[in-house]
Each structure stands twice: as structure tokens, then as C-alpha cells.
Amino acid sequence: MNSSHNFSLWPAIDLMDGKPVRLFRGAFDNKTEYDAPFNDIVSSFHAFATGIHVIDLDGARDGQIRNIDAVKAILEKSRLPIQLGGGIRSVNNARKWLDLGVQRVIIGTKALSNPELLHQCAGIYGTSRIVISADVLDGKIMTEGWLKSHNVDVFAFLRARIDDGFENFMVTDISRDGTLEGASTELYRELARNYPKIDLLAAGGVGSLADIKAIQAAGASGAIFGKAYYEGRVSADELEAFSKC
Image 1 (cartoon, helix red, strand yellow):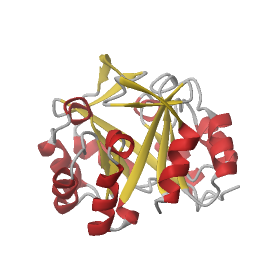
Image 2 (image 1 turned 180 degrees about the vertical axis):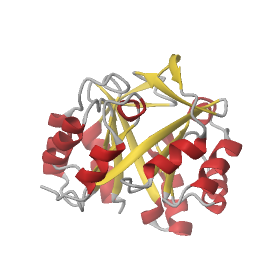
Image 3 (image 1 turned 135 degrees about the vertical axis):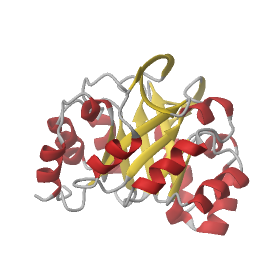
């Protein structure tokens, strides 16, 4: 099992119309908006976070770069590395974010439909700056802002990308996302057992510090969480203490 020092914590900021929001099970019409300014949100992360996980939800839906001013505001306030996803479906889109100061880009939809894009980005920036996103519903991959289903098994998807030389992955169980009902630890345990050398970030369902500890115990490399933090189910003090264990 990873020690807390080796286990990464990635609080999430999901952006829609320039504002931080959280969706329920990925539904664009079932969102919660948070009023806190980016400065307050970001500064609260510094005590415990490994980095900040930012998703351009409008970009994920539209396949274009959106929310660029909001991302700039986050970059200006953060001392932490930022990984960003949503609508990165071309080398040009990846380049714009990386040149802006984002540390890593997350590629989901095109990692399935156009693996050549991954190789082009890796050729320019290296595999360390690419995170491959597998968004899963009932064991199968979903793309295009979780709106399109594919008959592709998550294990086969990861295996193909690992064979291509990629090592950074995030896996989201859509059925748990935004529910606070606990993470899909059995899925992460199986993935970690099958692919022990990858950097595996788990997302979806975190409702407490106990859920984060369960993800760690399952063998994942880190956890992505948002709603639990914003709604006070897990505090910065708890996370700071955990990160220093």
C-alpha cells in the first residue's frame, strides 16, 4: 500500500460558464454552483494538495477550449501544478493549455478514437505531461463529456495505452461521480493489481476521508475529489494531517 507521502491528493475544480460547479453523475443539467472566488478555493488547497485537477466542462461537451479566463485566474493564484482536461481533441488544444502554464493535460475522448493524437502530444511534450482519462459506466468507456457510450472494456483500454508507453491514468466511475457514496474500490483494486506500474488516479464518489483512505488501500496512486471538500464532508485540516502521515 502507498504511504500517504506517496499518495497524491488532487482537489477538483470543474468549470462551467466561468464558474466552479459540481455535476451529479456527469449530468450537465444537474449541477451545483459554488460561490467562492477562485482565490479562496485555490489558497485552501495549498496545505494538503499535490496539485489541482481542473475540468473544462464546456470544453468536454463542445470539443473546444472554453473557460480560458477562469483557468488563467486559477494559474495566477496557485503554487501547485495543474492538470487540466475537457475538450482536448487536437494537438493545438493541448499546446494552448500547456503553453499557458498547465503542467499536464488530460485526454479522454481522443485517447479512444484517435490514439495518434496521444503519440503526437507525447512526441512534443513527453508522456509525463499527458494523463489518459478512462471514464467508466458499467465497466465500459464513455466519451464526449460522458454522453457517448462505447463497447470498450476499461481493462483493454488501459492495456492498449500502457503498451503504447503511457503511464499516467485517471479512472472515473461515472455512476459514483458527485454522489458522495464512496469510490469504486473493487475496480481500482483490480486495476492496480493488473497494472501495478502505472500512476492511477481514482475519481468519483469520495464522500469522506475514509473513502480516500479506501482508495489508497485499494492500491491507487492518488485520489481526485471535489464535492466532499466543498460541502465540508472532508476538511483541509483532515487532509493536511493525512498528507503528512
